[in-house]
Image (cartoon, rainbow, N blue to C red):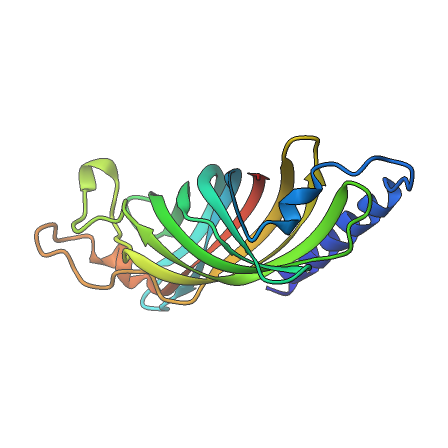
Length: 234
């Protein structure tokens, strides 16, 4: 987590430095009315990387670890409620698609792929720094409730689905970005980290598919982490 926060701080500093470097007092200010609206909407597209924080149980000599990061994508709707000149409350419902691969030691099947389709329901507070020409860096943070509609009620050995995840989780989210004011709309680039608070591994055995209990028993707890690079069009 310390590395994630360091990356976030560096990204924020780069965003501010970039905006200040591009500042020209004589330039025309684009699309000023968007920050004065009480409520405005838009849409968002993003690239994500889903990660597991795996805590091994230590039972026997079986160990599990995530070994690859497959890029996923995100889509959603932006709704922004103005609270103050520098503050706004944002609700960005959307979908997140991703995949994670777990490698096991000392088990017949060494790798298990876990696909997720998350319904994302975040409520975030956004703080904007002073606008510099047509650029405005910001910080954002809050919480989200995610529903995994891809989670399975039973194992599927034919498709190498040998563990199950719980369908819901609560995340803390923190990020930074830059608002770019264009003539007819505002484009924001944003880097955000989301950390799941619950153990999302379903520890109950699937008695209809016996013989695969070791894949679940190898892990004591599994938490989810997601890094997302988003592009908001408002």
